[in-house]
Amino acid sequence: MKNTVILGALLCSTVILGQVGVQTGNPQGPFHIDAARDNPNTGSPTASQQTNDLIVTLNGNLGVGTTNPSTKLDIFRSTSGAVKISDGTQGNNKILVSDANGIGTWQNTSPAIVIDSNAGSLLPVGTTATYLGANATVTIPGYYAISPRFIGDKSPVGCSPLVAYNLSTSPSTPTNLVYSLDAHFPGGVGAFDFIYSSSIAYLQAGTYYMLVRRGGGCSTYNSRNNIGQNGFTLVLLK
Image 1 (cartoon, rainbow, N blue to C red):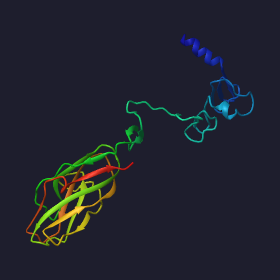
Image 2 (image 1 turned 120 degrees about the vertical axis):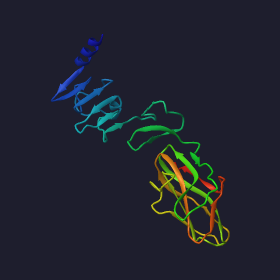
Image 3 (image 1 turned 180 degrees about the vertical axis):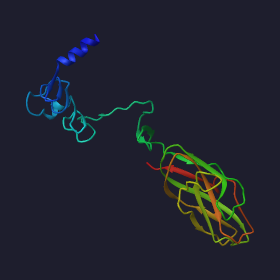
């Protein structure tokens, strides 16, 4: 049976000046299949005749439904649904998302991807970047809205001219920081400083740790230990 199929394909093929035509004696490129066998013997097939054709052109473009592909893969279909990719991740209302190597998978479009860190701990905050316990893990690379929440209690009143934060891929040392420079906020004139803000940055997959530092002049400076005052939220932007 296999030999019969191969022989049948060869009998229906035509070779013209190095071009191979399957079910057509008028190939429009190096390799051309006319599945419905409805192309003319001379000249170019009409748009409707091309809808059942497949062609490989001299520049290596592959056309499906068109004999004049303008890209490496050019698919024409007059109705929706020209491409189907079923790899186990497909689902209703998903979008195709690429990783850094160009490998695509289907991802949810809704609900929005919101990642809350855990609550940080009550710890002393130093004048160098200090990890206070709040971290979150990103599984889908992309642009995220980053919303930190921090309150630091300080003494004496009005000490520390600033408070700053950053996100690091290491809890012990500032490594692969999200911001090239820490995000700075003015110190409060009272007994505490705070950070409530929002910014956008591209995050790779991985775990991110919130690092906080303060200015000088304080005898004590401590973080708080709840998610509303020592943590952060990441929202993937669509």
